[in-house]
Length: 252
Ligand code: PGA
Image 1 (cartoon, protein in one colour):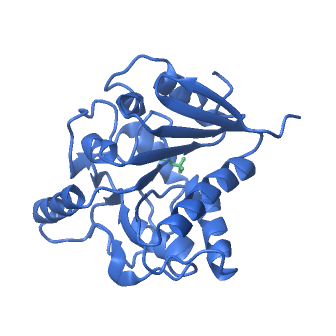
Image 2 (cartoon, helix red, strand yellow; image 1 turned 30 degrees about the vertical axis):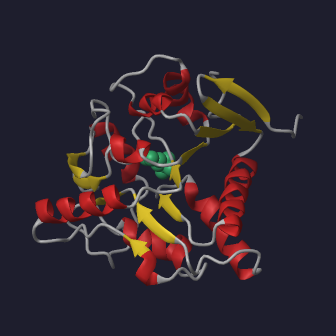
């Protein structure tokens, strides 16, 4: 088995294919650690979901081994379900504290999260929109949905979209149902950064693992670009690195 990363160029994108999800996650974690070592006050755009959990576990281990300090790093999260308190175990805020922030000793005053339980959701979206616009990130970490979504920018999201309240697609509701810890049903609405906000990042790293992502990856990297597959819109960004395991890359 070839254990060396295969790097090819598709449009402006860089693609690294590794044999396993573990190795792909290690590769991404090393990129993040290298960035923070070089720039301890950098700003990271962070994602939730099953995919980045391995990456976050490795960042926690690196911080606990004192290979890197996240004490001065600022973070901005991509999205949040509407209607959940940040303390609710199914909120993305709780996920971030559980999977990364607590174990890796982030400074809570430098963490930016959406308040999904805000009484005035429109005002909360406007607050976050202004915050995101004023703080472009050095590196945005992304997963990808089976329908090609990035953040909660579902198919049909315009390339010009900014932070806003969205309805989740039926496919996302089904997929995310399996990830719930306490809720019976996935919330149907969310606040998400837009495609244009994501594209403002200096560098973007997309991590995708498993065969369920192969079709979304194929569409994203086919060279065709359109709202039907939101991740394909990343092709207009000049510095996107796609890190895939063999399953996610199998239709390349
Ligand atoms: P997943 O989600 O990592 O749980 O597959 C990715 C996403 O929906 O962006």
